Image (cartoon, rainbow, N blue to C red; front, side, top):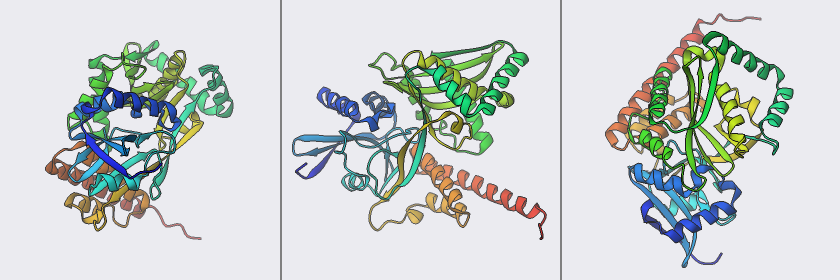
Length: 390
């Protein structure tokens, strides 16, 4: 396509009716943009809540090439809604989106940070997201194939369901729930989980919880929406999961379960029941996000490649760009690539959530302390192990 690529930055609510219509046409034409995060409804709602939200409109001449919704945190640009945005990139027709380096250059920020970039990103680290792609016959056909492939695992989950019913009473599952009180309960359980595991509490900043509540109210617009599914046993809430959905894709987003019932796998059982119920309404792709939890390999049969990268303006150094990053790099120094990556991702979440330099620094201090304690615990464990000699 001829012409110099130019960018205009606007507020999300400044997009015209024609802009939104073009956005929808681009999403519909590009299978890589099937995730609900690429819908204009997500940008409109997140843009009204996330601080310093904007949309980059890329043009060649008078023709729009694409849109990139984003937010600014100090000198860093991130995808809009980060750290809660599980897919992002330029909304464009197939083959027409500028690559990540070009986007960073046009936006002219000291730093562009992405964790799940869909599109061309030459220097990004490739990661895989995991999905269930069901046959047209629906859940029962998928489950029959999975049970044949992973018989021991799914028989164990069937026993777990019986144990849950025996211990607490009849198991009941509902989906398409939008009760604000239930969402508050989910958030409380999730915050408790963050405290137990030492992860940054992404809901402490306030706007992230507001975003989840606002998305729940969007269920009447087109086919985009958010909802929860929940499982009770004998009247006791055992698991809740918050999801986004659009078209035929269902994105599992925030799962949580009662920790004292972990032996009964209520969260896994809820995901299975949600797929069964949602498939009755035409959903065929169920997105589980990134790997890490062992159970996902038994469920998922499709992957999507995305990119993770930090693009810096020439001359800047990530390790000395500010005191908070330097502190976290110190905590992860000489501890292996995997642990340094974990520390970097912790900082990305802190930077996205916290809107003031002081709160970002406080979050970095807390994360560094957790990282150092974990490193000390691992070192003590290694020292305590007996030496094995031949």
